[in-house]
Image 1 (cartoon, rainbow, N blue to C red):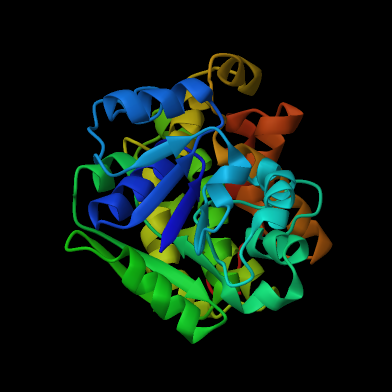
Image 2 (cartoon, rainbow, N blue to C red):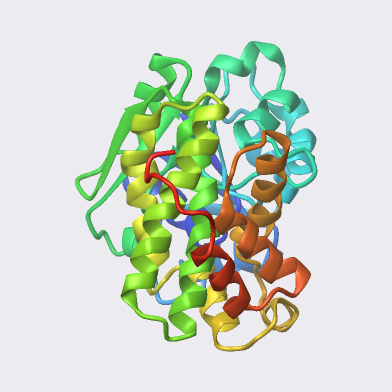
Length: 333
């Protein structure tokens, strides 16, 4: 069985290497030719996964059509804003029996669609039941070092979820399955916005009380929007909800938390973006989440304040004051 992983960033490289270690037939597509060449020549990806040796069986390529041709499983690990055009260019080369596994987290800018919805619009209708999402608390560097990790495979088809569960499970990477695709994807996307918020207050030296409040109330906001969009509330207390939220808001390896830290310390989004090769997905997700909340009339005050800080020049001090001085109410409203 040929498996193709699209995207040779830290997470794509880690997942491709995990599968290659299981002696699967894996090909990793890299946008950067030099990344593909280094993987094949040196068994390393120093640009995105420095210091990690890669499996001898892993092959890398810069040729997208050749990568997906005859693949029985295609794993997409690319930023939300490039998923649609990239996938559209691959479809003509797809096998009619291909299984698509989305391992990215985010919402499509403009349309505000979840990534499985984007994939569903691009793929032929016959492949709709062969789509799954892989999500949960998982820093690439820790998985690459075989640190015990749990994650969720979500799909509308139980057979597809079960297949993906078996495919990715290892003694250090435990995969659960879930049929709540909406909840799993929203949890994975929206936690990045809350992580930016917690990074901001940490960067400003506001203490762990404030961070705990943001994590807790952030989860309430994610759950509110999720319920309106058809997710099951229980999903947000699980691996792809609370688990991923806590990791991203507190972990030293979190890119979204790091963005928040730098803003809390006085940097602007423009300054942060100018000095970074990759942009934290939570920045795009913040705008999409805010617009989703307006579209569905869902109250998401933390998301709103993060949006105002990032895109409207709101000060962190004023944002906190507005959050703390909102009308008093019951906790579960």
